[in-house]
Length: 369
Image 1 (cartoon, rainbow, N blue to C red):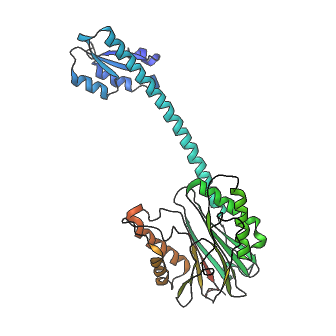
Image 2: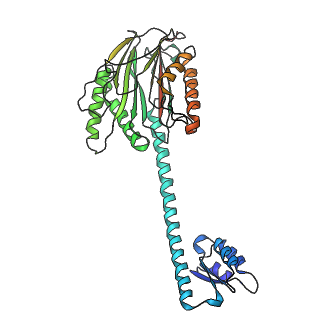
Image 3: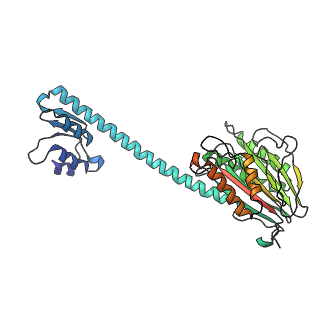
């Protein structure tokens, strides 16, 4: 019987527990060694209706069992039909599972590609100011930390050269997570490239991006909005000019150690991008001194929560930055992220349940030649 099973597929086997050379459970084990698609549906037959044998047979894959002493045609027909039906359902389930695995593998491959593309869109090197000087002589230095909560992120930033003496940072946070948010972030990246002629005027730059985003989103029925902050630092004038679209206020750490939020007007910021058509954004100008540092970030930085649901919060963020004012910027950022991660580790396992992006700008650092 086993030789016949290995040579061709049989849909059903009636297997007696008591055989002349092997018991039925041993044969059942041999059947289970066959490829899954080659195994017949097994109905175990017992001479005395032994419940222990029947239970063990079902554990090992038998579809049904019958006591031979009481077998009648209707019972036999029912057992055969039931076993074949179960086998067909299992085959369909196996096919569906295999198809699901194929689709999941394709989705994972697509997400991996999307992640690589998104990382390629992030700045690979920073501009130097004045333009053309070596990085160690630049009067404007950048440092960033970008931590997606999944394969792709809705947080996005760009660093743009503006003039011989100035450069800019655009930082955005798209509503939601995952592929949908990442696609909108890619749209923002494209719009920023189209608006490079306005890069020196933050208010006009955000206004034009908002118009472009509104035009693109008008072709969909989904509600999508993007918070964003855009700032330009001019080392010749010693000033920061900034426009804000519903984004958390950037923090300015003065070289003396004082920390202040940079708000735009009485309301602090304009509406998020994609919310109000033809919105005209405003800008604020802040003087800078050598050694000042500016931090722009998404809300994933301070909304990390502990096991009780308490958020890290802006107060802890300000205190953490102030306490590390004497550190070099890369060390400061790593220490800050470690503190936030440890605060939220008991809740999320890593401290960051949301996408996180943090960019720091050093204005005329003391070690610049």
